[in-house]
Image (cartoon, rainbow, N blue to C red):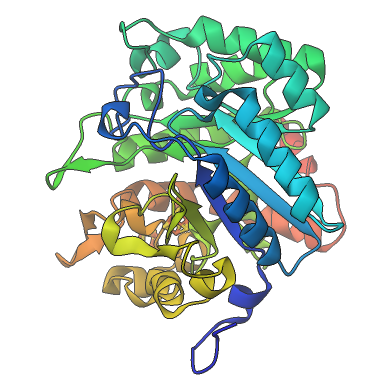
Length: 390
Ligand code: SF4
Ligand code: SF4
């Protein structure tokens, strides 16, 4: 490993390496409004040769006993089960006793009976994107004819449940659905979707924030409204990832979500040709860290460029972030979202900052109480009783 003379933090060498694999490039069967990676820009798919070499090197690069393959797109199911059957074959050849996990992130519109059998038989975890109730989901998540995809995704979710396939849900929070926090929250609860992972959508085109990006204040209001409902009724019943991460920090524990961590760099992305990029969110040529034909994955992931990228999350904080009382909670947020301006006019400040501040200010008293209960071995759900009485 080329780690000499580099300022590597403890986490960098003990975290497992994750590589998200874009087996279909940006190819997708849908045409979601907020997706800027339309399929027409790239028609390549990963070849079996690249798949085999990638699988071998990825497994060799792991210092832990389990290996996580994470298939993303575009829409990774476009490749069909044959490709992933080959992936499983290579994983078993090169796995050498390691536990192999596979996760596939899908829009849920291509799931056939054949796919369901395959996913169940090979113990895949499926991540479905559902952006809320039909009027929210269909607002942006449409097919190439402009038709909403809600019914197809919900049908897939029901089948995935029937087959007993491991799954979770990811929800993009945009300018539209952020206006309906309680409708969103109740929809998920009614449909027994109890692990909620909200991903704020922030994007820009030629330096201008897109109209479908969630505004900082809408994002803050969205989180606060859901928090108020959750804290009264659902602690211990519904998991909301940003609440969990925030509570961990109140409990002085480390969060493993890259967005809220001090540094990043241990989650890279592989494209169809075996090029590795610093992160799925940074896939321009400038962020390429090598190709599997020329370097091992260990060398690319612990190389100077990747480590510098990871450390820059902390070293490039604005002055406002450095002085902020909430720094330990958000650590300046994802560098991709740093397209705003700080109160001092400094560029590359997190666009969502005002939303984060609103949320952290709002939850601080309750979370402090909850962290105290946890420290004393008490029952954190007691906070719900407190709200009932007041
Ligand atoms: S750039 Fe953003 S998404 Fe990528 S590893 Fe860093 S925090 Fe995570
Ligand atoms: S809340 Fe805003 S100022 Fe504070 S650390 Fe996060 S992004 Fe920076």
